[in-house]
Length: 136
Image (cartoon, rainbow, N blue to C red; front, side):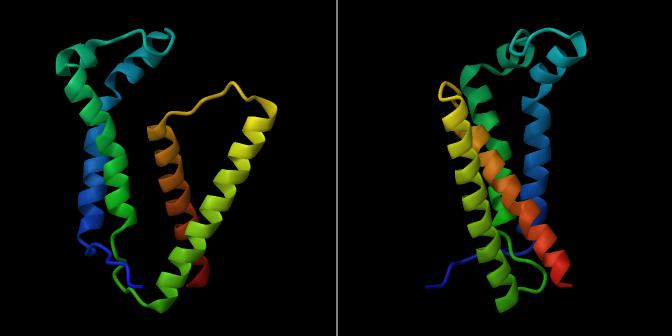
């Protein structure tokens, strides 16, 4: 089974989309942190964008990371594919173990889907980066 990966230039597109969308959606949280108030107190940008656009913009950083994750390396060979698979497997195992441990010690903790997906993609990218640089 062959999995189609996006071209290398999509790495720049995904990273740019992630940075721009993160800046657009992080304004209220940044303002909360600067003022030292509890999270979710300020709603300036949420009111400025509207709830639908704010929800759409909150999805874009995860989508940008996904585009970055699915983009080819400059040199895409069988070893890079092996590293991708190995990184993916290690990421799944780590997140399952962490989720299991969190559930055992504190079953009332709930995570939203965007946090879970962001954590998965970032952990995959970090593991893949270190495995790729370790191999070189």
